Image (cartoon, rainbow, N blue to C red; front, side):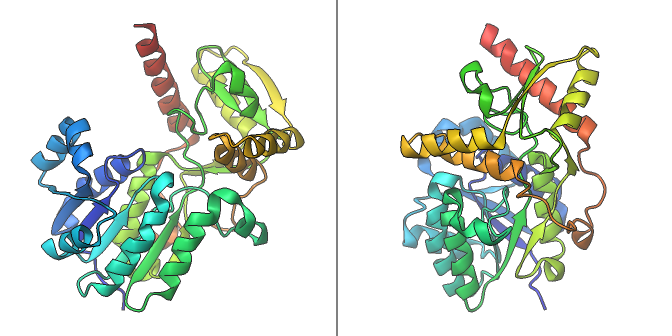
Length: 328
């Protein structure tokens, strides 16, 4: 029998996707007894307004060093907390290995949600060799070796948002060959033929799907949940952007998969920070986020998620706000 979630401790709660996951959990706080975040002293200073808002909503704030076993163990015991939800960013994915070890040794911790949200790192045989997957694969291996800890991988595919660098963002002109949806310029560069399907999940839906998994412990126990907001094609996305930006055709070009692989290889050879992102974009364009069936129904989340139309509307709003700020 899977453990019921009552008291949640969140790591990475104020990060890119973490803020959306934390918000969704708070929107459902009546379903839980206690919610806390573990954050650094630096975050208390640099994101003080956000932390204060969370505190005002009843969230317990625990400040500490993620690399300190004593600090983490003390945090686990302070609830005590039965469920850990990790939203840490890619640069510190490896630090989850210690979190898992400490959580498994703690008698109160029963469930662990690693920071998986995104590309399916075990989609097929080739997935094990993809460079951006290596740390997450180590995390999965660690979770499979634990004795007393249940786990859930929430796999969403790429984020269908327009924040910098995400799937529906406007890339700088110099980088648009790697894919762009530019509202201001009514310009798109599609990867591959533009007809290949891609599974998208908005970050706010990632939060909703994590909550659904928390509320369905038996269905989500010790497995990967492959979920999304919707599935579409780049050409369908362009058509919706055109419809919502006045009906005029956008200027559309294409970057072939062979060209994308060339750019990806060059980036890795040059040690460029963007190399990992190019690998992910190539994986998405090859269909590496598609599955025969999605698991939304398993956790009761077939409805109430973003559609193609609402996702594009949000992307236009995000890009317009960013353009407005840039003009100031």
